[in-house]
Length: 632
Picture 1 (cartoon, rainbow, N blue to C red):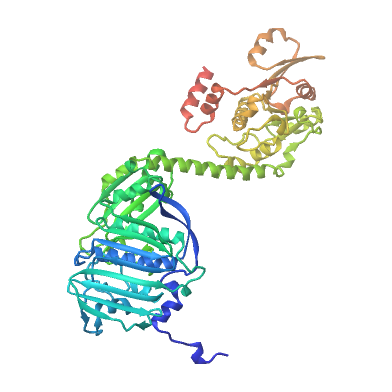
Picture 2 (cartoon, rainbow, N blue to C red; picture 1 turned 90 degrees about the horizontal axis):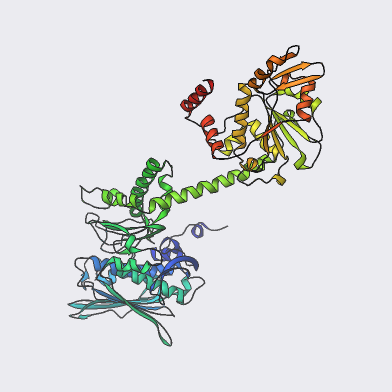
């Protein structure tokens, strides 16, 4: 069992940084990540999978963001250029033409360069009553680099004096080489040797990592127009890669992404606080806060929320599609540069801005805003069509998923098995499915049918009007779900006759108004599978409405007009008006089943128009007119 002193320990802040490095610099293990880097051959940015160590990159970022901060200070001693040179073995030399005051800090009793680069929680960013246009916040910065180096030195001059000092052993040892002397120059130079023992899986600067550093330098110059920087990567044999960067405008930087955007189609605006460029398509975020790369956070969300809401609202109003703001978000690329007063981040790695939008400025009258003209241009842009196309494809994919589920459901047992009388033969083309209005036809069908080929399903009268309904709602109806299962239909597919369970579907309803309505509703339902009509599989069994019988002679009339023509010749005949199939005699039933008269239905534009007119939503007035004309 551990002693109390072993269980509860106290470590110095410096040792805490080394022991809990993830809090300060991120992971010290090598990782793979897709990121933008500069392609030397094509002179443009490309997305590539790179191997790198986040913690190691953070050290370099701290030095680079320090240059950005100094460049943006009003009293930066004229900083206009920087030089970043490093070797494969991990020796770095970073120099700029700024400068640090070489004076003694009275409270700390040491020179300012030593104070800010070797003492934790020191710096010039602690006065939150003053608006700062830099990215430094926690007083760690370059000291982190010192802590993770075997050797670290700073050499600086402020036009009056120069200072040199160095540290070893992860900043734990202050070397006895401090030197202060007169100088009329101004500059700051850091040199350090990475302590590879503090990192896993890596013991040198790889080509991938060197490429990432160059991208960081390009970003530095792009977000700080007017600042130039040299990049030099060496090994034992000399210079491997050398380049120099300077941008007059941020648009020059955007042009490097020509494989991903067309700058001519960008929509942009700028005000005192921000510059924003939007390009339809891509879904990329490339942002900078106070001169340093930061592509996540409240600054990105603030712009995108406004664009997303406006476009989603327009699509809902004009196209009647409820895409929602969230689904607009990934359909366009955004570049932005922000000036945020005293920025706050989610961690020391500063990957995500957390400053609330209302605190982007210290001006008491500040209110975050985006020009209406810019929002209107976004709503007129190709973003709208991209969102609509995406939404339709999404719905189609979801529909296909639903159809697969419904088709699986359609292969299960029917729910109203007592309503179905099957035929014996397995030869599909010979099988007929007779669909009757109700149970009253059951007895007559059983006694008159050919059991080998004729099957039946008994409805409960009028069925559901499927006009305007999707497959899910159709399948929720027991009768229609049963019919789909019995016939062997599949949603979203071209149902072929050989794949179905029947070669013929016979609608067998009464000849009165109710029977005609049921027939129409069935035809409307079967129209969901138009291939049934194309293959001439749907028909109606025509039954007589009046019979005239004298002895063995039986005359059948299928229309009232036909009967009226023959009526004078029917003296002595027994006249029977057939209300429905249930009133037919066994003789008539056998006649209907064994010698049927079929009326086949075909599908054409007129048929579709008729079905829409009779069963379409909102067509009540049209139906009244048609009924009136029929009566007249």
